[in-house]
Length: 95
Image (cartoon, rainbow, N blue to C red):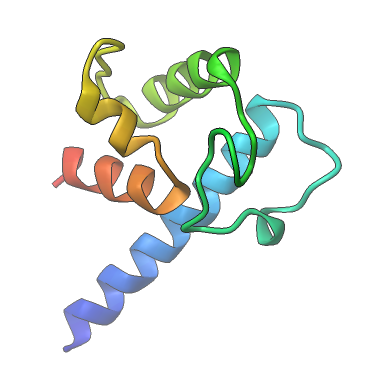
């Protein structure tokens, strides 16, 4: 059970780091990490990011977490659906 708590703390920290990275990368100074819903869509409804934001965010993820990304991958779109799916993807790549 102790490992599960560590894993949950690690994921929570990763989620918070991703939210902060989104704010810094996209210059969203008018919002805080707490205002970004973990399960809300990043694109369209939800946070309302566009394709240029996606490119900048993808580059930031690659640079910060060392995760190789393929722009043509349909699964990549699913990984970038929300902060939660992005955190799970990064965590899986580092497992």
